[in-house]
Length: 153
Image 1: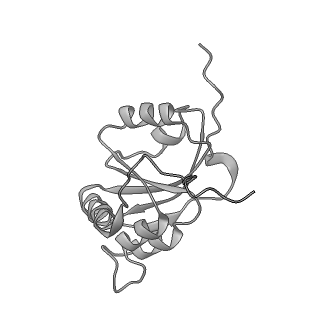
Image 2: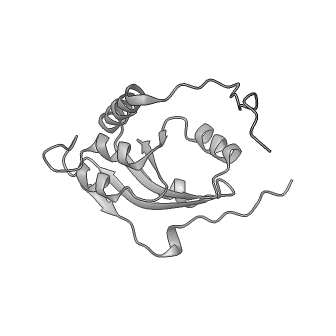
Image 3: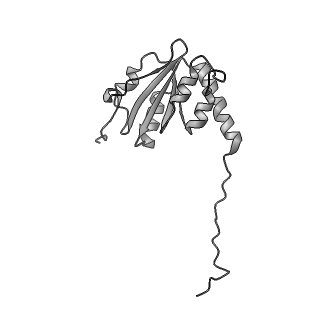
């Protein structure tokens, strides 16, 4: 049977591409946050749940979370020593791989973030960057990984 000329698929949604302007805005935001906050945590996320992330953001209102393409986040820090935003930031840029996020915070103790059951998804810190000490990779063992059970209500 021949194809009908009238049988054409028409998309009813019209979306705009994000484009270069949005990517440049993300890079600027990350650079501003790098100057403003004392610490930057790099973490991997598995089985992300939106409602738990919302709770996490509410609890850490004085901090800033970034999720995005790793190449764009790495570009914000500078991929080489010549292009880095601050001293040692290119090591943080090179550490971005997999599904990662960034947490900018002025809170002094990482144990507050890691030692408490915050959500039902896994949150594993990969490293921490400070202006004073640069980037430090955290251990690869599972002691830092948070695997939190479902909340029972």
